[in-house]
Image 1 (spheres, helix red, strand yellow):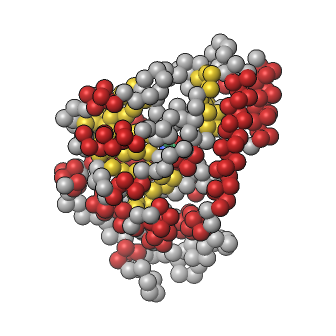
Image 2: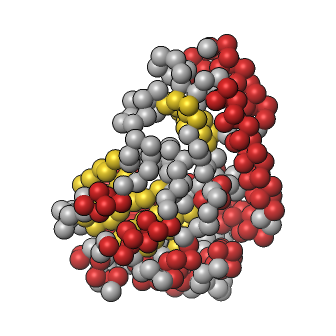
Image 3: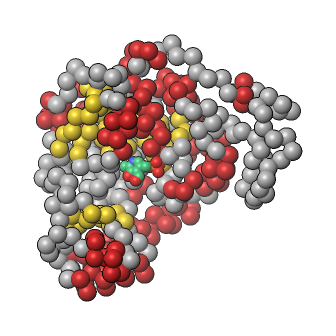
Length: 346
Ligand SMILES: Cc1ncc(COP(=O)(O)O)c(C=O)c1O
């Protein structure tokens, strides 16, 4: 049973009872809000003087319809970064560890460090594929949680469906699959697989394909027991009213997201070719960025920033990534400017 994996001291945890978790309707005189209104008028939410729904019910319902699961299997977070932090704090005891597949998104390690739990790193192969049997051999009795990022940041690679299912079945702890970039991938999300596999948690976000990084809304889809406990340990009002409304608005009309996604995929292919023509080794990407190895000495990241004001991410000091930069796919104009500037540097 999944609840036995929850940290022992949290199993009977009594959550903070926020005012709005007790009463969601009525004339509110219970939360020391400002009954006269708010100091700012805006077009998104006219009740900024009131605390938000602690469980983001409308947004969860809309998300549930969108990804075809039930609302009780969705936890909405202040960015998926918050969900990563809460998942580690919910499951991993001080003497246990998380296992991460590197190179990958840096927040898993940082969140574990902050929570005071150990991190074991397993390296992808040189071609960025995952050697399954070796990964499973790294699991020890202390391993409580495995993070897999798919498509992976920064390599852009997608995990095989078979591999995710094998990890979930062979490993008795929690498997977190971070799908921040899944909308750009050639394969569907694992969200629905959470219905059958109780130790699988899938992370999604509005920050990438939806173009809403600024509102900080992420979510995870998981077994309802996991969601119940995440709701117990989260900050009382983790998602603000404006962000919840904007995310809801986005879900009402996904066509803008789908149009942007299509444009990004076209531009990804064009940018990949242009970089390859310049001599870069460009790795196949299933995300909205490209990992590319510079043909010259070092990387051009510093010169691009200082001489052209173009900012890309330098990964050259990370294992397996010597000479590599990660470039987010831009608009055609931005990509043209990048290529023109790189030509000058080269
Ligand atoms: C793999 C991965 N997961 C999660 C995040 C963070 O997402 P959010 O903005 O929802 O916190 C990022 C952001 O770059 C990411 O690359």
